[in-house]
Length: 582
Image 1 (cartoon, rainbow, N blue to C red):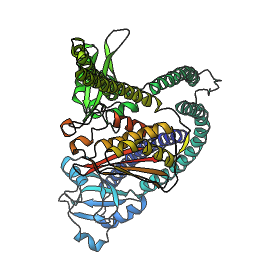
Image 2: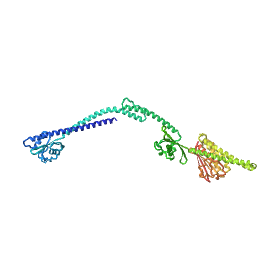
Image 3: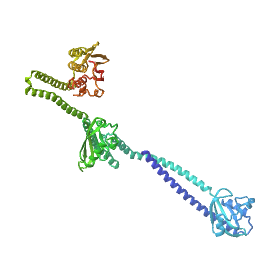
Image 4: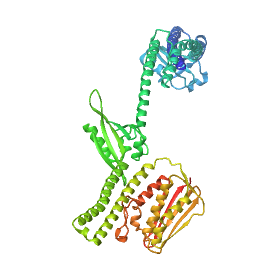
C-alpha cells in the first residue's frame, strides 16, 4: 500500500508538471510568435517607407540582401503578378528560376486584401520553418507590390528545448523531494493500516485472542477498536459453536441409526457414516441436493411429503434381496415462525429383527405342531383305553407301547428345544476348557456302536494325529453324536460310516462320510433350519424332531468353525467341519 501511495503521488506530480509545461511552452511560443510578427510588420513598413521616399534607382535584389543583414530577416520583394524581384536568401542569378509567389498564403492576402498577411510554414526554397509576414505597398518604381519578411523559427525551438530541459530537471528534483516526503508520510499512514491488516489476518486464521493496541483517536483507531470488539465477539461465538459442534458430533457418533438432515431446499446439512453404509452411498457432499446422493425414490417422496406437510412419515424400505430398513422422517421447525425449515431422516436396519421375529413365530408354530402331534396321539389312545380297550391285553399292550413311544418322542423334543436354547445362550461365552479331539471322537463312536451293530453298519475312525480344541467337550460330543446318529439312521443295513480327523495348519478338519440315502440338492441349504425335515416319504420309518442339525450348526459356531454338507441321492452324504485348534 505504501508503494502504491508513493506511486500515485509521483504520477500526480509528473502529470501536473507535464500539463504545466505544455501550457507554459504553448504560452511562451504564442507570445514569441506575436512579438516576431509585430517586429516583422514594423520592419516591413519601414522598408516600404524607405523605398517610397528614395528617389534613386535601387537594385531590389541587392537591397534585399543588404537590409536582410541589418534586420537579420529574410527579405523578399514581389510584384503584383507574384513574381519575385528580389530575395535576400537566393543568389541573384537564380531569382528568375523561383516559383511564383502570388498564391502563397501571406502574399495572396497582402495583394488581394491590401492588409498584412501572416503565415508559418516550411520554406520550399530553404527547407526551414519560417514565419512569413507580407504587407502591401504602392507600386514602387512600377515593380514592387508587396514586401515580405521571413524569420526562421529555429530560435523558438531552441528556447523550447531549454525550457523542457529545465522542466525535466525541476520534475526530477520535485519527484525526489515528493518521494522522500511521500515515504515519510505514507509510512505514518500505512503503518497502522498494515498493523490492522495483520490483525485481521490473525482473526481470519482463528487467533481470536490477539488484540491490537490503539493509541490514536482518528478513524483508523475507531477501526482498530471495532476489530478488537469483533474479535471478542467472534471468540465467544466460535467457542460456543465449537462446543455445540462437539456435543452434536458426540450425539451423532453415539447413535446407532443412520441419520440425514436436509434444509427446505432439500440440501444435505448433516449425515453420518451409518446412513452411508445402510443406503450404499459412496460419498455425501454437504449442501448438495439429496437426490444427488440418495437414489431411492421412496425416501425422496417421504422427504418431500414431510417438507410440504410437516407431518411425520414412517415406512419400511425393502432393499436388495432380503434387507429391510425402517425409515422415520420428522420435520424440523423454526421455533419463532413455526415453519418447516428442514427434515431429519433416521434409518434403522431391522433385517435381523424381522428375521428373528419370523424365526420366533415359526419356532412357536413348529413347536406347537410338534407337541400337538404326540399329545394328540397319546390323548387318543388313552381315551380308547378308558372306553374299554384296556380289557383286551393285546390291544392294551400295543396302545401302551405307542403311548410310551410318543411320550419318549415328546421328551426328546423338549430336551432338544431346551438344549438348542442353552447352546444359543452359550455362543457368546468364553470357554477355556482344552480337550483331546481324539478321545472325544472315540467316546462318541463307542456310544453309538450298539445302534450301528443293530443295522450291521461299520463305523471306521481315522484319527492318527493328536489334536486339541478349546471349548466345551460335552457340546463337541453332542455335535458328533447327532451327526453320526443321523448317518446311522439314514443308512441301509450293511453300509459303512467313516469318521476322519486331520490337522491342517492351525485348523482341525473332521469329516463324517456315510453311504446312506443322501439329501436332495434342493434341501441341502435348508437342513440346518429348525424343524426342517427332508420329505418324510423317503424315510417314513425314521422319526426325528428336525432340530438335530440346527443344534450341530450352533455348536460349530460356538467353536468359531464352519460346516459344509455335500450329498448325492442314493450314494451318501459327507459332512465336513473345520475348527481352529485349541
